Amino acid sequence: MRHGTLIAMTHDLSSLLRSWRELAVLAETGHVTDTAAILGVAQPTLSRSLARVSAEVGAPLVRRHGRGIVLTRYGEQLAAVAERVVADTEAAVRRIRAEVDPERGLVRFGFQHLMGTQLVPRVLRQLHDEHPAIRVDLVEGGAHMLAGQVADGEIDLGLVALPAPVERPHVTSEVLGEQELVLVVPAEHRLAGADAPVPLTAIQGEPLVRMADGYGMRTITEALVAEVGVDVEPSYECRDLATASGLVAAGLGVTVAPRGAGGPGTVEVALDVAGRTPTRAVQLLWHEAALDAAPVRLLRRSVEDVLPALLGPVSSGVPPASP
Image 1 (cartoon, rainbow, N blue to C red):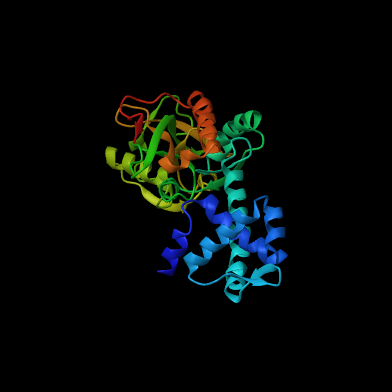
Image 2: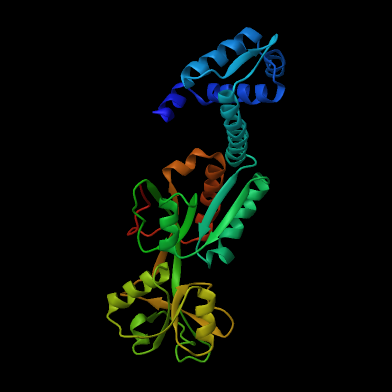
């Protein structure tokens, strides 16, 4: 009930803060006249406000002392709380305003590891050129983890690659384009010199380096392998495509990855899966509430401006977006 009484003191944040500020300043000055002058209000107005708060609390907050007014012990208790509330609220408001400031705000941007070398820097370059004071917190991880963080509001935007648009409540998935998937093999591998796309069945019985559970490429690779019915021997599991490429270069297996992921000592071989070139859809995810902040909208615009030109066109089999 006391919580409800305090809420009933005021009808909006502005008047609530005004009441707390009046008590906090009165505790410092010890005089209604000085308090009114500091706050820039008429003394009768301040007196009526204090009387209203006293009535809501149910105890006198001030008493006459000589020719002035001082806080009672109840007023002192409430004023101590008021000082903390005013300071904490004003600090929180400053932080919130800084985050949503269209020119100086903060965006939490998540993406898969490989995108941090191939795609994300180009996006951030454009954002920085147009809005240099916007701050971006970068979060790297697996596709499924990032999708969950977007849904939970832990990050504002997520750049992921999965076989189909992400479908989660209140999350929008916009497919920006597709990346070709290739077979990454050691430089001395029997398929390294192929001058035409090789069928995925050509890796029958080969050790396969794959990503760990929760990563988009793990989901995609398993789907492709199952589609053509090829039997492979899983070797190592990784959380970074650069690590997978290094293992391939060491002759510890082959892997399926986006074109450009192969490192030194490897060769990227074009793939044929049931008569088509395999791809992965690159998607931008956001929670509907995240777009309330102007900096988030500005980063989304940079992503939409830059990435489609760097990616392949969306195939007819991939829906462009999911609400």
